[in-house]
Image (tube, rainbow, N blue to C red; front, side, top):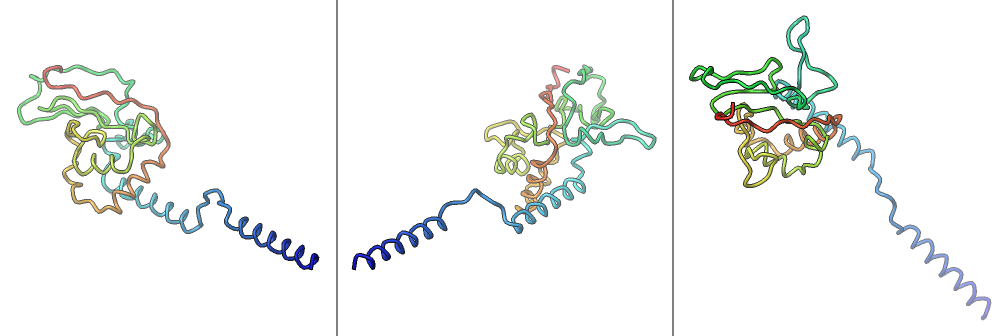
Length: 195
């Protein structure tokens, strides 16, 4: 009887150990399908950013033999914050006209002067943003996606994105969060009376 009890105890312990080992939480691992889905999502976001013209304003450029060319290391980093700000007299702006700087990252019009934002994954860009903040910025025109903040200034066409599909918005957000971070603090807008 003693031998049977000892064997039973050993079997129970082995069963308990086996069961508890199989239930031990493993570090979070992404399955191949999850990685593939994320890669596809980022690729879709990159495609959308490209065809929607985001680089037109948000990527600094330099003049090349065929005109303005994107600066690869500064993609989507916005108006270069270390660039000197040129003051101009709003009286020089003919009624109904707006001015754009040479790399299309700064715009002057009746609203004052606006600067293209840093959209990279850096904290000076959207690195600390949530997907919900991004959604509010893109679909409601809220600065930094924050309620009760100012409206995004021209030429940001946020009104065009009011009805963007959730999956497209998510793809763009995932792509932007995957970009190379570029530390660049973009200046705040300048009201017309301060130009």
